Every structure is written in C-alpha cells, then in structure tokens.
Image 1 (cartoon, helix red, strand yellow):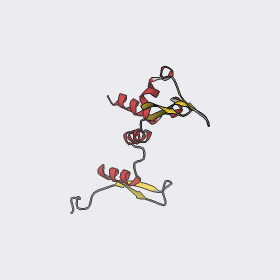
Image 2 (cartoon, rainbow, N blue to C red; image 1 turned 90 degrees about the vertical axis):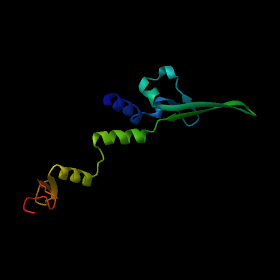
Image 3 (cartoon, rainbow, N blue to C red; image 1 turned 135 degrees about the horizontal axis):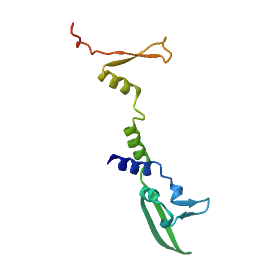
Image 4 (cartoon, one colour; image 1 turned 180 degrees about the vertical axis):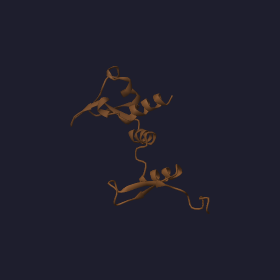
Length: 124
C-alpha cells in the first residue's frame, strides 16, 4: 500500500552518498555492498566500473549514481501537504465554505469567515 511507497520515497529522499562511498582530498572508495543496509542499497541507481590502460598501468574509474533526492522529497512534500502555497490554502478553504480574510485587529492578522460565491445566495 501507500505505506510501503512512502517508505521507499523516504529511502531515496534521505539517502546520503557518504553511506556508499568514503572520500578525502586524494581518493574515493566505494564501500563493500555487504556492509550496506537495504535502505542504502535502494537509493543507489547505478554503479559502474571502467578499466583503462594508461602509460602508468591500468586505472579503474568508478561512478556511483544515486536516485534523485529532489524528486523523492517533492513527492513526500506533496503527500504531506508541505510547500502548498498560501493562496492555494485560501482557495481550498473557499471550497469548504470559508474565507480567510486579513484582519489587522486579530492576534494572527487573519480571521475565518463563512464564504458564499457571488451569485450563490438565495437572494440573488
């Protein structure tokens, strides 16, 4: 169900490349897959190794691609209603018969009033 989907999105959204590789100013080392937990493994999109012959011997180029965190974070935010614009919230309230009106005298600066679309009252 959706709980498993949310768990998978969480694995991607909160992944960290440092769980897959260790690095310093001079080298990068890919960690042994046997040491990685399932959450880390799920966040890896692709690992590739390319060997090249050089004048100094063989070199191995390693590339680690993680799944896109931004997409997973955006989907989680959408599911949880995070980042919805203020005007979208005001529009949603109107659907349910309420209007959020600025009120400088209110402690929060806003008040909630009943809302009726123009032309919908029985007197119209």
